[in-house]
Length: 324
Ligand SMILES: [Zn+2]
Image (cartoon, rainbow, N blue to C red; front, side, top):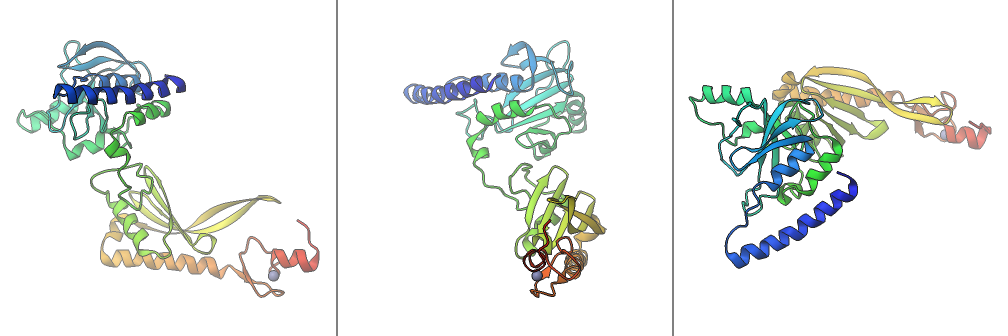
């Protein structure tokens, strides 16, 4: 879908929703739109649909991406409905469950999209004594939209844009819940241990650090060049000493070097957490100990910027006529 088609689609969808609301009000009944969401999702996943049914949803084959060639069914679910992964012959390898918004009047809106291996669903059913797997917190691990906990990168960025336009407004406008994930890119009902730790650190540091979140890491930049960088991954906490590297006479880049590492599991006790705070302070002290005092203006300056060991850049320019 091109950008123009996308906008047209979103426009048409808005008009349709308004029209459907009118129809619902006049008829006093919800208007049937059961397959719209499925078709949009199938398009976003680049699935070639071969069969379309109320019972099984959209059944077809991934045309591209990491699961290209794999058979899949894409089905819309309202809350607490059991999964129906068993599309007819030939059986599917994967199942995509679209969870609708809690307000069931709007089945054209997407609350979440989850990708499962069908074999896994059957194993789960066996484990639970034949009960169909239901919408559950465990689903977060299979989420491919919005946010992505799933290892399968099946939705390309343009397609993600398309899905954002049909996203449940409640999800889209939800305020970020976690200070360790300011853009709310990895929402979940519960926090992983390293996320909890990052959260606690953000709340313990004043002034608040700058937080950058990637899937498997949270980076805290505290007090910029006069502070420290803390990198938290699922296994490890690193404290890092910021530095500036010169790539050329006028081109500097902020980097950092490793100062200490500690296991996330060790940092979970009260003592462990205090130890992390101690290491952060130690890294800041180390960074500040590298600063020098200018003999001309008396200011402290970072080691990367001095013209000589005892003259800062601006004094060198002003008083010594140094030109870089
Ligand atoms: Zn100076």
